[in-house]
Image 1 (tube, rainbow, N blue to C red):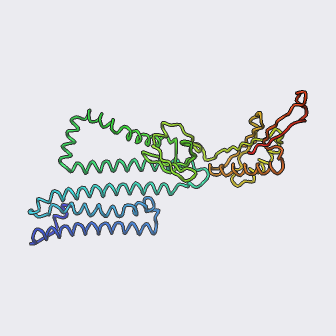
Image 2: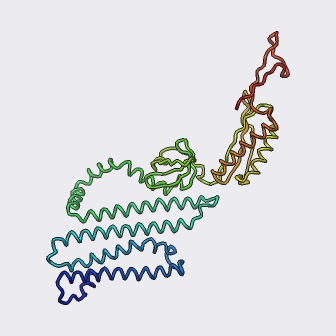
Length: 376
């Protein structure tokens, strides 16, 4: 572009008007080129978006950043035509334009990466019941996008700092003592680097994914966001719990949807020994199969304990998601409680007190027995 600008005839113009003409031609040419290219791309996007990369999302995301990059590049290329009497400001202006150009290019790359992530995410159907593979891909895309953004920002900052002579001298000194500086920086950034590497490890191994149902810090929650340094989980009451990403590498936790979105739920029923187990089993089956939250896979009822005060039964039932299994369990609890009170009130938990006769003997057959029902 500099060679092209040198061909612009300025005739007998004074240096400053000649520079103004050169700058106007350069910036105007950049704007015309941008308008022509992106105008054509927008026409294709409206008519046949499938012919463009990412169905035109890349065009929309990078349009403004590309305009700034072209304008700054054109202005930087016009600087050699700056008059000689402006030599004092030529250096600072060139540095400022170079820094602005680096920022514009970095923003262009970040926007392009975001467009790729959005395009891939839009193709994933995370609303279906069995969305395990979609959530795995979405998690990897999100983490790798953030990793690339960090790399772009770090490189951009390094390039900007190298424009200053004092920083270059400091960098040369650091290279001379790289061993000591590396040890000091390693200790200082140990926690930050640990979280960063934990984020990369989670992106590869994926012990958690976006939309996973987990139990952390005693709370039932759903993974809402995964970054390179922290994870945001949404608790059932809509509170957000923010945890360092290293937590999921170093601390045991429950992941209910690690291999499948299907979840098994349990309901415990504690009754008196007079309970008709088969009738309870039939009623549990009726309640489960009548519920809209049951996925039709399986349900069971087992007697799991015979205690000194009563019987414990466990109802097992399946649902497509963790949210559905919660609703299903609540429905079954309410239904079995209502059924016991209406049809088998004798099966409700109670405490028996037996009074001996006058001779101190315990009566047989339940005579002298006082039953006290538990309040709950």
